[in-house]
Amino acid sequence: MLFVAERTFPSSKVCSKRGHYYGELRLWERVWECPVCKSVHDRDKNAAKNLRGYSAALIKGVG
Ligand SMILES: [Zn+2]
Image (tube, helix red, strand yellow):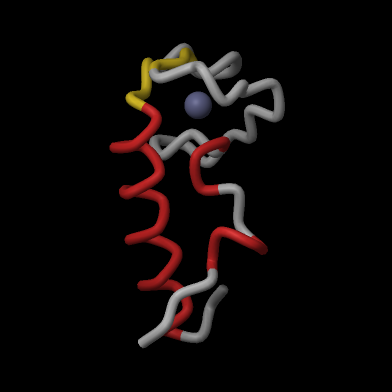
């Protein structure tokens, strides 16, 4: 399945823990702290977690 979620879903900018949106994320930030729940996220791992959750939601028809 070809996945183009990156265009519609800002996976690296969303807190994988609680779904908070961090629009201030810059390209050079490899690690960031969620401004709301203070969770610290590794950019790539966070994005991967979000995409997993996002694809699961799509499959269930929730997203
Ligand atoms: Zn958060």
